[in-house]
Amino acid sequence: MPIRYTASNLNTAGTFYLPTRTTNADMEEVETLTEVHRLRGEFLPSPGRERMRAEQIDAEPRAMFVMRYRSWVTTNHVVDIRGEIYEIHSIVDVDGRRRYLELILTKRRFQ
Image 1 (cartoon, rainbow, N blue to C red):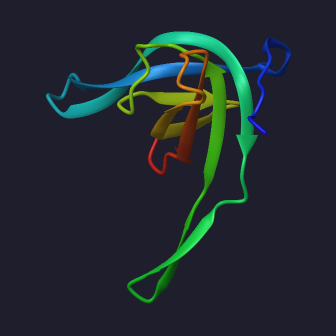
Image 2 (cartoon, one colour; image 1 turned 135 degrees about the vertical axis):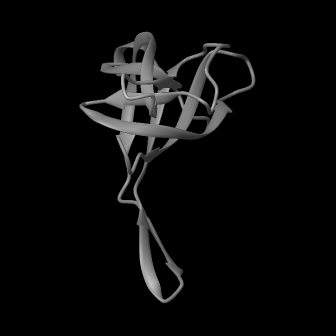
């Protein structure tokens, strides 16, 4: 059975940003976030995933944000949802008909 999304489920605000490198007053290169767009979607947090790396456990929190199709969304964007910044790991066109996108997100470690 296919997953069905409706406009009434898209009730969480998401703000999309593009990371931009700029120079501050001390001539140091810094990364800033430039707001691109605000829109609504359905936020589905997941418990995350753990993996072993170099004798330590590395937890990678993942989540999904479902939104109406937008052609400009890329994995270069970051998304602010409920005050947390997420990087877009992958983008899936749900049914191939350009109606909804599923964004697989990972929580950004450095903000």
